[in-house]
Amino acid sequence: MQKIVIIVAGGVGKRMNSNIPKQFMLLGDIPVLMHTIRVFTRYDKDIGIRLVLPEEETESWKRLCRQFHFTVGHQVYKGGETRFHSVLNGLEGITGSCLVAVHDGVRPLVSVKTITNCFLTAEEKGTAVPVLIPKESIREIAGENSVSCNRELFRVVQTPQVFQSEIILHAYNTEYRESFTDDASVVEHAGYKIYLTEGNEENIKITSPLDLRIAEALYRSGKH
Image (cartoon, rainbow, N blue to C red; front, side):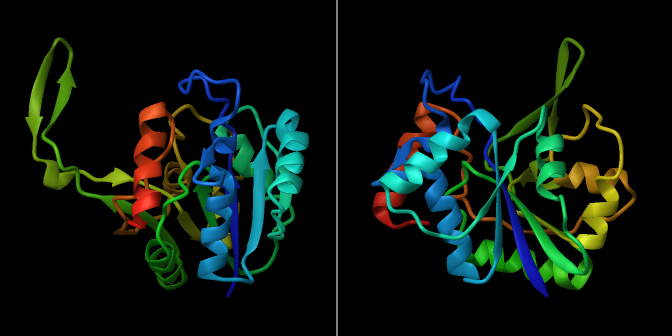
């Protein structure tokens, strides 16, 4: 089946204490976002790449592509008010049966194995979400109290989240809700079952200076 990935990159770097959007910060010798795009081309050189950026960052991205001689083919779409609306914009014009992944632009260390497992699961079952078992103890907040939970019953959710096109297009044909924290929550709201696949520990989301330092160490060590 034809494969498409919508890479959502709407961060503004507030938690980074920087005027540079986190997706444009350097990881190794090139911006984070370029690593993210490249890993999907390592999975499938023919994958359709749709990059969703805040409209005001489009020219900055074009300059970076020229500066770093980045020539991987992709289409740029305008970001929306929320992640939901950004993904909705990225879905524009998709027709026919295909597989659609949605990935965070600031998860540059996702493994090809994770991407492969997600696409294979979605092709077979319709949906696929990569997850990890929490390593630390967790507690559920109940008013002013908290209760110990069995972490084996919980999963930490990552991206890419992959869906058959008919499923994600139908799911996003709805009004936005605050409970839509990721694409799986939108698809689940539409009545579809979410199937889980194994993620990779290095697939961290870079949202803080510490995250960037960890990503840099993983990148330098080749553990991704």
